[in-house]
Length: 526
Image 1 (cartoon, one colour):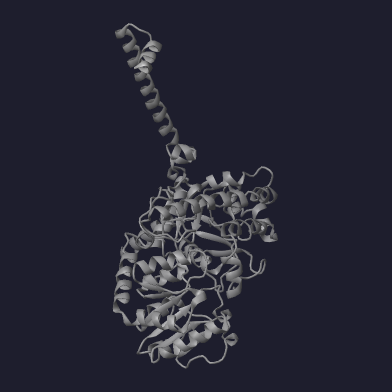
Image 2 (cartoon, helix red, strand yellow):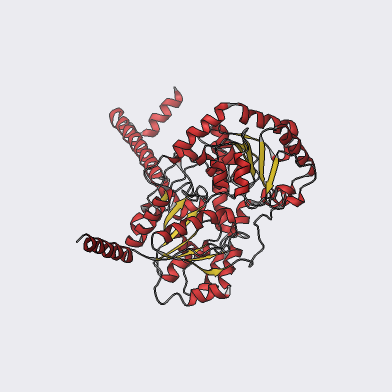
């Protein structure tokens, strides 16, 4: 009897699972590994829920994963950026160039041509016949052309943002981004701003939106080329987005207003369960009883490409940390200059989360990328930030304000300044205490980031997503800003004042029995 009841339960569970299993297409044309870490984790989470996920990316899985299929492998189609960005490239291109035009073109419209890849073109023309797609998921970054795939497959579309919302992402779902109190990602402002900061924040916001809309306009032609002459326009495709999942959290980025079409899932990429460390690395960490410092500049920046004088200063400073050890993630250790201190271990690949979770970790030296710093915050590890470009400056400035990090300028990395930074973070226990407290706040949520993301994705599939859209999407910017209301009120008051003046003047004429001109002339004579 018990076995019969158990079998019935299995049948019920399998029926529910089959009814709620969807087919989802994930399209990620940017070849940035740091971005894809978040996207891959989400797609795996959906696959674990029983959904069939088909993925288009530059990073096919190395090991098979149930319900996860790499339907289009884009690796090798464009120059790699994984462990390939030198210090000179960052300074000359990513820092000194106009960021938004770069995002809209090189990291945006130019990526639209990947729809011409033979496998991708075949997928567009002949989607799976055994089971049609229920949803398209893609990144909200520079290549907005991929948002048109929602209309092409006649399904809702969900956008992912690997950072706080970019200015044009807010406009896509009419999300409030008032520059009086919402810091723009392209400014270095955080929290409350004074008058001059608000001016700078507002100007950078408006300029970023104008630049992106202008430089991305040619993506219209890409949509028509690859999806056909009947495809919708770029701006229409943007308005079709049902939901955006943003890699932010109020404990980290402060209180911001969000419509129901924006959901914060900060830390989504952080796995709840991590694989065991390699035995030799595990032993090295366990033997670091005086603690160790972990240093990494993410998946793109080559630390070994820094100027020789900077690396020499770093070597000297790290040597002074002994007996504290240092673990550095270096893509090509053989390219480092000689003289590496004996207390330093370099590896070309490091499983970051389990390293940051280790009981002997003392600090994290980072370029300030959001993914890596969120992992440090999750693990309660204080940081030394050396921001290079993008949102890294804003991130590190925020962590400095919260006293969980100290900041260093990359072009001013002297031995003395490095010594001071290490002495501050390692010697002042308040940094560790603040990091542990901040970790608790960041983790404390009613649902995990993964559960939150999967719930809202399934919600959009079930209900279509139109009920999440703000009524502000049907208003112009001056209507949203109430300029028409203020104008009407001003005209009403002005007309009322004028009318009162006319009435008073008329009454004076009636009472005195003279016309208005004589009254004025009398005043002049007097």
